[in-house]
Length: 170
Image 1 (spheres, rainbow, N blue to C red):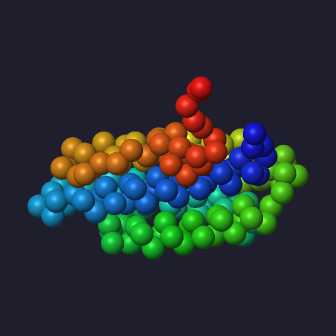
Image 2: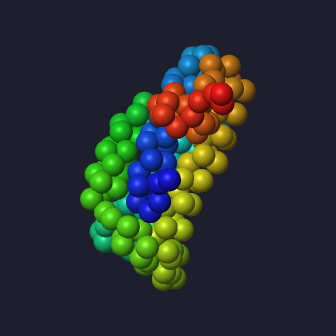
């Protein structure tokens, strides 16, 4: 059973897979539907996911205490893949460097001028759930625009990528 940082490394492997499935879904929205407000909203939510992950990594690494604005106007679909790729590489590097003592610790941040302290593990868990929540929104919007959807559930990814972890009962 995975615990500590190993659990979050594993969860992030799935998140990378699910993020790119989400991007493929967005790319399958027919061209005639890309001017629709729902497409703009889906792209903005996807960019928010990448930005939040990148923002908290910056805070975790001590590169600043203040969080950026949570949503960005004017983001383009064409910018999403590079945003996700950069964020994912940075997170993989970070998760590869830290150990359980870091996960068991706290970090400080500032939001709207107020300073807060939070358990690192609580925020890592929040980021995993945050991504799944927003991916669901994006998938629903993309589906409503005629996209080809994919299953991003963890168990589908797990059974495809970790065959030693499941099987038929004899």
